[in-house]
Length: 239
Image 1 (cartoon, rainbow, N blue to C red):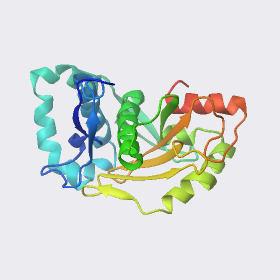
Image 2 (image 1 turned 45 degrees about the vertical axis):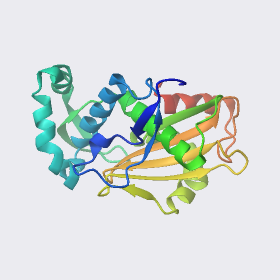
Image 3 (image 1 turned 180 degrees about the vertical axis):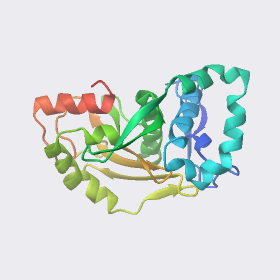
Image 4 (image 1 turned 60 degrees about the vertical axis):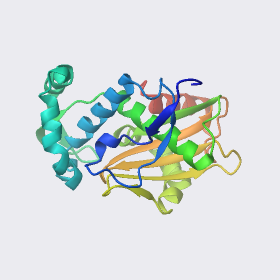
């Protein structure tokens, strides 16, 4: 990304009701990072989150719902509207331990599109806090909350103890009326290796990592090669 730079909001401004929060974060962005395609991902991200049970009652979601519904009636949004209707399915609601609760209607979402938005947000916030972009040779990996819960129990325990708990103990940065909150931590041995916790609308959680491609040490964790491969698949969505 070396040409055609502009300014872009670090987290998608579509998730906020108007008037937009005064503390929105903007970062330099090139054409590839601020394009029609990324705008479509931002719109999809808003849609996928705002229809989730629990989030649909958030004050900002209620406030923006009329505008959102009108946008779906726009002929140019025909593809998004059809995709929304096509992916409404009957789903099982279960407890975290897998106990069935009930059947309910839900929307199957393209998790990779959600991760692209969160990954772009993480890179922007990395730039804000580190004063430089993520160096070449580092990966920006994002995992949604549901996928993280499918990681082996021992690895979840390690992550909780060594990364998530210390980061959650820190003061979070909140933008808007509880619409977006993030926390982060840096590896003391490698300040470009970072861990991030993102929460949207107080419920939708994502875990993000920036780490060197050739380094198997992840924030004081030393996974086996097999665990490292599985970890990368978990965060990239290829599982």
